[in-house]
Length: 326
Image (tube, rainbow, N blue to C red; front, side, top):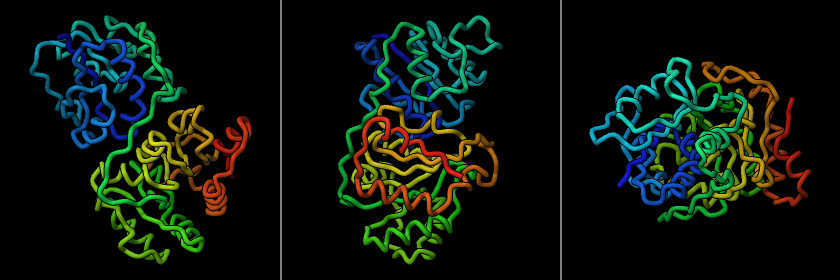
């Protein structure tokens, strides 16, 4: 059996944007063994994707190890960095499918385009090799959970980088508004964000028992997102989970624009994405200035609209979904 090795050793959101590409690979290579090199912590979500046969735990690329015979094809869904191409080259594959890097003229591939949605990027890479990819094939089947939180409002307070974290006092104001409306609210985040979530809960008057940050594993978090009436969050992996499950969202973007990683165009009717229209530094250690231009009033208005399940037509949906602020 031929082996097809796929490298995507990043976070949850990056994995979810690669789902259409992974499924396209399975359709194109139905009898191959698809091996995904990705972080072990993502295995519960990898198991929901279906096309992957084996997960090789991979965090930092420098620690990636491949002890099996060389794969027939190594597919780089990680990025065009020299480090990722070197890591795949060490597996001695029959060939590498990757975006071009000038440091490796012997490895052909399409040119990397910064201004491209992540889903489009990985589908385009496969299409350059003659593999048809369906960008709409993003959905996941919700996992089974022993705890039912149907129709709650999830407020995800964290983000993978300080530049993408909306201020705690503003999240607290949104939570207070939701409590006035009589909504059940839960706060989510990882273990490192539990203190932040507890602080927000205290400011908002939310009981500690509604703070799920640091208390859930990934499959429990996924089930909570799938069952929610609405998710309020920044540009995070949780936003991609909500998109995959068809859960309505209010997403706060900055410093990167939603056209790079927000809900794809065909799904915009279920999402409201707020963005100030300015690209900033994603590696900054303070909240992005554009993100800070999104104020509480704008978020509350978006939340109210989503909770009323207002139905609008095609062009109106798109205008409502990608909403400039400030």
